[in-house]
Structures are given as C-alpha cells and as structure tokens.
Length: 458
Image 1 (cartoon, helix red, strand yellow):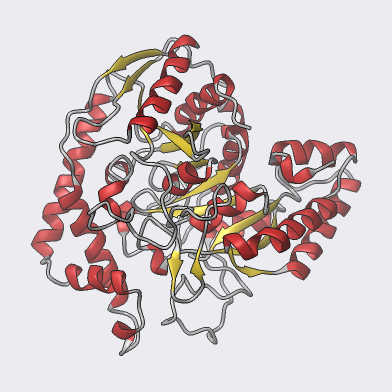
Image 2: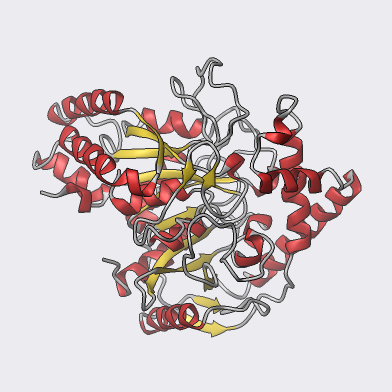
C-alpha cells in the first residue's frame, strides 16, 4: 500500500487493521522527504532517528490496542515558528542564537506529542513569518511541489509543500494575514485559520490580535481531526478559549444544506484573475446545486489594508527591537523595511488601527446575522514565479497587495478555511475560502466538507 497517497484518517484505519504500521508510514514519509525535499525545500530540520523512535512506540501501542489518540502514529511536521524541545526554533532568521537551550514545547508541539503524532521535523518559513511567500537568507527558497518553478506561498509555505508532496500527512502553520490559507491555495491542500484563541499560542506573538495557528492537511476530515488535537487550552495563553463542547471530527459531517451562503467574488474591490474567478464561481455553483442557498453579495467594507499595515508593521518592529545590535544588516531587506515603517507609528496610530479592526469585526458580526457563511476566492491569482514577494512585472509593492481576501479575516478573528476548488489551464491549484462567524469553526469545516464531496480533489 502506498501510504503517501493516503489521508491521515485512512492511515489510522490501516493501523487499526494491521494493514500498515506507523513505522512503515514514517519510513515512507522519510523516503519522500529524501526524494523531493531537495527540490521543494519544505523542511529546515528533519529528525529521522527521532521520528522512527516515535513511530516504534506508536506501533507498540497499536499492537496492544492502546492508541493514545485519533492520530496516533501519523507522520506530521511543524512550522519553525513553534518552540520544540530538543530542536532549535530559528524562525528563518540568522539573528537568533542557535546555541541557546531549546527545552520548551509550545502548546501546539505539546499537544501533538501527547496525542502520539510522529514529528518528522520543522518546516520552512520566511524570517519571522513576515510575508506571503516562503524564502529567507538562512534556508533559501521554498517551492511548490505542483510546479517547482512557482512559489509555495507563505508564510506557512514549508508546511503546505510538505503536505502536498506527501512528506507527512499533516502539518501545523501560523496565520497572521493569510499565512495558512495562502500556501494551502497555491499548493492544493486544506488550510484552516480557526477562531482567534481556539489554538493556544506561547510565547505570545508580537502580531497580537492578528495571530492564529491552524491545521493543514490533504482532506477536511484530517483538518478536523487535527483541530481536535490542537484546540485544548493551555495556561500559558491568557487569550485561549475554553475547550470545545463537541468534537470537530463529528461536527464536520453536519448537514449544511439549506443554510444561506453569501458569495462575494471580489469583496467589492478586488481585481481577480479571470480563470481563478471562473473556477471559484463554478465551485460555488456546485455548492448551490448540493443544497446550499447562495446569494451573491458583498459584506460592505472597503479595503482595510491601511489599518492592517499599521498592526502588522508595529508588531514586526516590536519583535525586531528585541534582536541583538547589528541585526539591521542581517534581516531580510523586506522585513527591515517593515521594521522601519513600524517605528514611524505612534501608540495613537496603533490604537486607531485596532479600533478599525474592531469596527470591521462588528460589521462582519452583523453580516452573519443574515448569512451563515461568506464564500470568496482564497486568492485573486494562482501561484507565481518562486523567489519573488510579488508577481514579477505586476507593479505591486508588497505581499498584502495580492492577498486582499485573507488579511481582513485575521483582523476580525473569524474562522476561515481554504479548500481546493480546481486547477488552472496550467495545472495550478485554486482555493476557495469559506469564512464563518467567530466561534463557528465547526460550521466552516462542515461547509468545506460539502465542497470536498461535490468537487473531489485528486
């Protein structure tokens, strides 16, 4: 059995029958890493020996009939933004001391270990996860396994590339402006940014109210299973939500036919590539044919990019101000510009931007009294040439210019998921985004599951 083509759910079912073992699955994942990571550059650290030790322990648990979780023994990776005991967390930066003690697990890492997942290694990120593509001067350029001449997206591009290529079934990314959904769309996988606080974070991110962690997988079912693992509270995050009242693995099968979905192809102000627009429109029609009531309408807000820029750049400046003297010459030149921009804003500017963020959240809260979910393209374009922050020749000034569908919903802290909707004529994946009211992660997953059923993704 070629388990690199299986979902995590299918792997676990095979473990239960003895058709596959966690050791075999881990060996196969490591083999694919050896074969494909030289081209994609998805991993910045691979611990083959440690992964096999974890897999052997899981194999014993399955043999004895005592797995410790629904994903026990599933090969997974974790973005190099999360603290991991025994592994360095360099966050794509040459300014972080490699020699310091690495003796703390983040909440995300701790939950993965407690549930028996096999940690293969850490995935690449742009420096401090600052942009929508994945490259840095420490580890180089991360490429899209669908077409290695194109970007995997970012900032969780390593995680998306790993999952899409079969280098482990699951990964966990971060999302401060679209960083899970952007690479999920470009690489043709599922990526969920849950409600803010649903997955605890430690240490606290300087990007504050924008920052989320989330699951990345090749199916909606796997995404829900991984969210069940990650959604437990942790005392180190004072903003963490209470435990879910039910499991996401059950909620994902909720019947959503008859619910009302707003379909906004442009949010009222976005220019969308015609082929992307046609693919997303066709997928929305499929949802309508399946029983979701579709109404084409815009939420009614203008582009919040000016406020987002203040929140993003001041967070970056706060973080970078803690770096050692002389770091200005070592950080990514684009990140240095964000650092310098952030220093120009006052506390009053920040509070004003945060007030705009709150107003946007109120507007969307009212919108969802009329519409159960909002559907948009995830991105207005397919993946472009790797090694560039913006599409070459586009005239755009920075990554937020081509991610207008994602960062507004970091500001509102709503759950939002990217699900594959189709492929362009050049074979590049296109994602569809489903946004729900705060705390409706279960609903967002259920609508995503319906799309997956009516538009199966190979």
